[in-house]
Image (cartoon, rainbow, N blue to C red):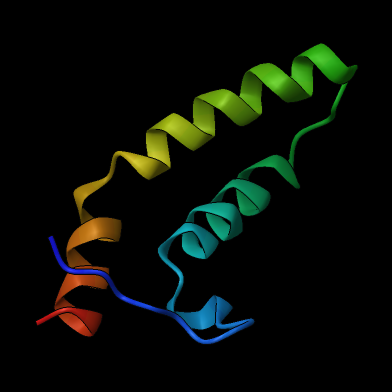
Length: 65
């Protein structure tokens, strides 16, 4: 295991920020009916994007190797 310490406020190199950006992009075009609708879709998009190998692989290639 290798620890990588990020600078404070380094959102450009934090992998979760790409996931948030993608979720925001998807949710912004939906009509949110209520809180439950938002929660269900947020969870769906979060699991979809956070599991993508491209997010992880690209981050590892750029910052770890």
